[in-house]
Structure formats: C-alpha cells, structure tokens
Image (cartoon, rainbow, N blue to C red; front, side):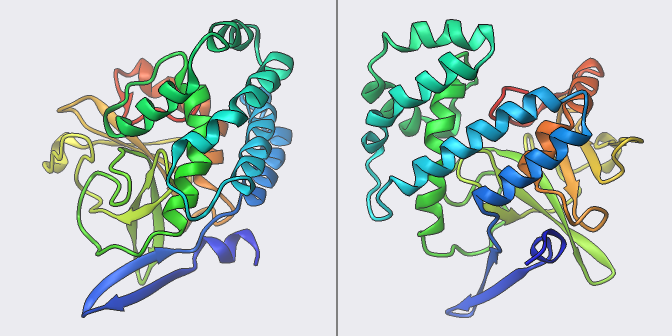
Length: 271
C-alpha cells in the first residue's frame, strides 16, 4: 500500500452499539523511509533526520525483542546499554556527555518511574533516552490492546499522555482532526475548534497559523494557555507521516516559540 492510500485508510468497528475507531498503523519501516526521503530534501533539518533514521532503526529492533504479552517495562533494561553505545558513537557532543551521566543511573528505577508517571512527565535532558526506549514498548502494548470507545478527550485513551500532534484526515466534503499520542502512537478523534491543552473553545482565541513553505502543516495555537498543536493535513499531503514531518519542520516549531507559543507536548527531540 502506498503512503497516500495508507494515510486515508480508516476502519470503523462497532461493539455493543458503540462506534470504535481504529486508524491504519504506520510501520517503523514506513517512518524510516520517510525520514530518509525528507533528509535528502531538507537542509534545515537534514542532520536531525539522518540521526533520527538511526533512532528509528534501533526502535524497530527493540520492538522485535519485546514480548507482546508482557507489560513489564523492566524487559527494556538489558537493552539500554546498547542504546547508550549508539549515542556514544553517533550522537552529538551534548548527547555523548549525557551518556556519561546515564551510565551511572539505575535504569530499572528510571524506566519504571518514567512509565508510572508518564502522563505528567516533564521533558528533561534524560527524556530522550527514556522515550526512545519506552515508545516501542508502549506502541506494542497499544497495538495489542482492545479498541476503546470514541471519547472526546484531550488525553490518550490508552496511556493517558498528552498529544504530540494533530492529524487532519479527509472525510466527505471536509475533514476530521485526530490527536496523536506522544508516547504510544495512538490516534483518537478530537474536535477541531478546541485547545487540547486547556480546552479553550472560543474560536477568537484559537488562531491558526500556516507555513508558506509547507502548506500541509497547520499550527493551531491558543491565546489562553499560549500553547500550539502542530497539525499535519493529510488531505493536502497524503505522503506525510506525522511524527517524521514534525521533526522535518523544525524551523516552523522554532518560529512558533519565537511568537510566544510552546508545543502542547514536546516530541522525542524536545521541541
């Protein structure tokens, strides 16, 4: 299935009369290929994307080594040294400094704590390591979890984390907005004219900014809480893969910060 076709596949299920939504999944390989493509097209974020390819390849390998029937986060602990070794050889100088500090930590405690407090975690200098390890773990659990009722909620219906991105999917003459979980990758439907951070619903306080360079990226801001949600419009670019195109549009994120808005939730790289 091509990227454009995959982006538009949405399957609806019903259980006891209640509609459930399950969006077609994007594979790790899909993400890797999209990052490789964009890295060759994007000078501003090319270096970050090339490094992201290495991270995605590592996460793909991590998921293959996890038990699909176990929710024990400690199964990640033996894999942490391998990731620290990757960062020591391929990371930035700042990441290499972080590795030195990370090798002194008890990652059984760190991962267990981060997972237990995932819904309210702030981004710190060690979050990159914890999130890289926990994302494939959380996504495997979410992939194997029962579908949930479609609820209008700004938090992930599976793991309770804040959304990282909005995804606009074509439907009929218009489109629907879905939120994409920052940790487990779950998507769920959410109204378009409402802030997912503070639930402000006054459209006069919810400006939408657009990028001239990337028309398919829209930035839903909130003047009440001064946050913004980057939205990937798949009706304009069906080849986009939200998490990858988010990283590729780093300059747009920096532009929003300069305007006084912070992201609803930081991505893996902390922006």
